Image (tube, rainbow, N blue to C red; front, side):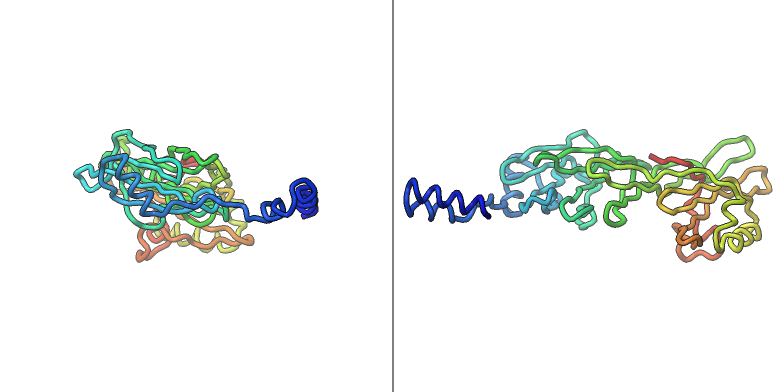
Length: 291
């Protein structure tokens, strides 16, 4: 404020009253382009139909930008991703894979008060896919390729769901059974860092409040404990298996949230199942890292 008053006095001395009016004039800000304008710009440049668009202030500078899925791939998906702001309209994805677009707001992920991410799933309509993540750096979109099935949990926390074939092994040692288990990532501002895991002993797990009760139930359901992974976000994955009459085995996991020294069960895919393992498992075997 002192610097501004000094500047006004100097201008007044040199050029008179007109300078005061100039110095007090409000600073003009750049007006954000409307969603309709950006949508029109993308359609004009791409010459393709917009399948879905995502309009938000991604870098917290007070002006909105747009990511859009463009082009119909004739299989229910999109072909390209375009980006537009008040100065730029350009394609930022044209790798040939289909895009599993939707119009849900979950594609726009608020990770802080000044930053939002845009995520989209890509794949070839097979049994697996990959996630794309975009953020803005100096007004430019930066693309990250991230495993599979990325979902926003809240704030900086995300889950990914890497594909695996690990829920059953037959008597010959052949692994089968397609699974997708959540692994846990945190946004750092310009990338992702996995909540790492380390194997802990059964003895250490038993020290947590409630652990012994769950271990008794797991044993009663016919499962054996394989290993236990404790992650830096407080999630504990307990790998279990049970043998069948044919000499093979089915592999599952029981998952817990550790808080204040106590464990509580995390629900798995089958939220209506009974039993500790069935109600908590995502199927297959957990590993220390999934990213």
